[in-house]
Image (cartoon, rainbow, N blue to C red; front, side, top):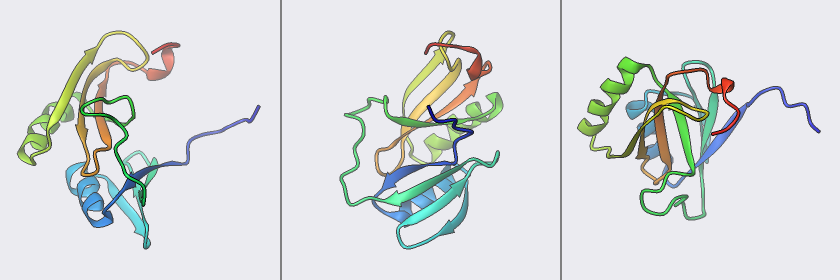
Length: 135
């Protein structure tokens, strides 16, 4: 078996780099590190990375408002409450909210789509996610 040390980055497929960069920087408040002709390299405040990558393939990872395939970002309790209001003001529809009290990731979460229908989750974690063995 491999001995993985940590996650370096993950990739989110997009159709329009300009539109996606604007969404992830101006709506989600994440930082652009650099950009080339087909990728925008992004960073979270805690120095985690992901890449918005242009995809020739259709992007529709979930049917309707399903959310099994998604990317989750942690927020504080105060930011969760503020984010709900801010997203509505930006015409970003939260299509599902949960308040999980069991499982791997406990706390309040809200799910919404990015401009390409990738599902984004913001979650106010109430406990250490590494303490649980099953979701």
